[in-house]
Length: 293
Image (cartoon, rainbow, N blue to C red; front, side, top):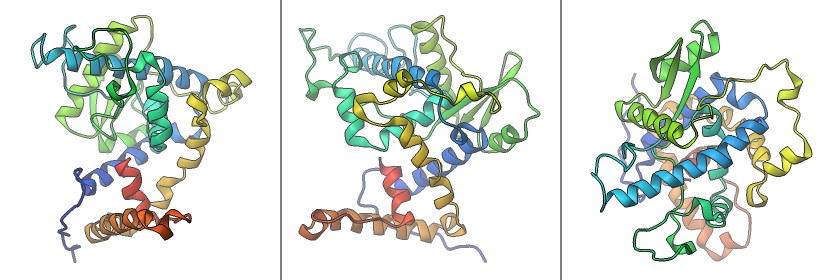
């Protein structure tokens, strides 16, 4: 007997029910690719903080300028305004950083290179109010290059996404939509223009190579953007997939109940009692909370 389709009126501007499904597929794919099974390398941290976030900021600038100066479908340097999809190693770090929204926003606002330069600004100074938070658009998206098509983990992961031919290998793109594929190409084009000597995709480390997981003191300091323990976040979040993998999480009514309970949870946190104590959510609520972030 099929599970009845749940109908609910969401109090949120985002449609969290389908997004929660995309969230789970995102985590499953990262696990299948091995991304979440090891400590992110210092190179991945560098690519995320020094290359990806400035690229997203530049994309936001192109979006702002395009409204007045260039065609609405194309950016000033030929980049389409259809969103960006990060490479898989960066996608995982970005996801974990954004799960601490206050710390993430503080970091973005304290980095002048990540400010969105509004056209009306006449000076080089950018206020916090003018700085646009760098959000994932599309959400829960990634792309991953694989040079061989005989890897079991890759075969399992590719069942949920688009696979494109690229050179001698293939690119897995998630979610499985044409718009995400366009955003994936868009990210590679802008990356090539901004960082012509940097590879967009990072090969997965050899799990037998201990140097891949051993971080120096300098590496650990780099992985603390704005004082936030980014690597610690990846260690905490890598097990979240298993906490939301029970059969109930495939049922529409269970997810709809989770959305309603999440709304009640947020209301409870605003009450005097809720503000004076730590309220631990259920995993059902936690899925919606993480999805909303």
